[in-house]
Image (cartoon, rainbow, N blue to C red; front, side):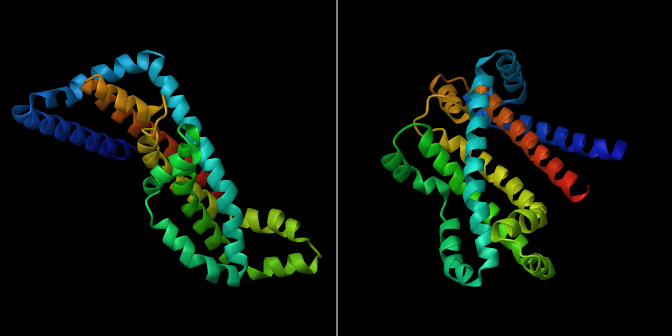
Length: 248
């Protein structure tokens, strides 16, 4: 237990030392870099979390993550099931999916703004586009690895396609689907901050721009730390759900 807790704490302490040393070295050449040091950033973080403003931005960002992830699931799971079940569709769609998957979601920012306007809609599109691929591919992989005897048994019992999907396929690929969702959360959290610099008036990405414009560099670093902490918590929840399902 001590080793299990001690090693992460040692790694965290080493990261703090490197952070302090790096900011001190930069401050000798660029005095403004002193504002990015651990102690000023920690003080700024305490002030931020003690007030209501940062939590309003964080909750709005989490809401956008939830909507983007929901859209990715709505589109990714059916396409993944179709890809795994229908070989012809898989052969026709795989080159297109792989091509689109390799395009950075942020590349679509100008087009998203032109088509959807300024506001939340282009942010939802970018987040969903970023998150759909791990969900789609993991769903397809799960369907491909299903025991074919399950599908044969469902057909022998005269199950409809709807019943086969809902009662055989989806329960059988839940572990793969949760893996895809966990990967999608990591990707969507990375894309969130630059996406929120896209003309919205609230959110963690917007708050970073606001701290830059106010020259509040300690707050800027504090928000970066908070983004990392929230992302770590989201990944922890996803890992816990995956573990609960796979290990009963």
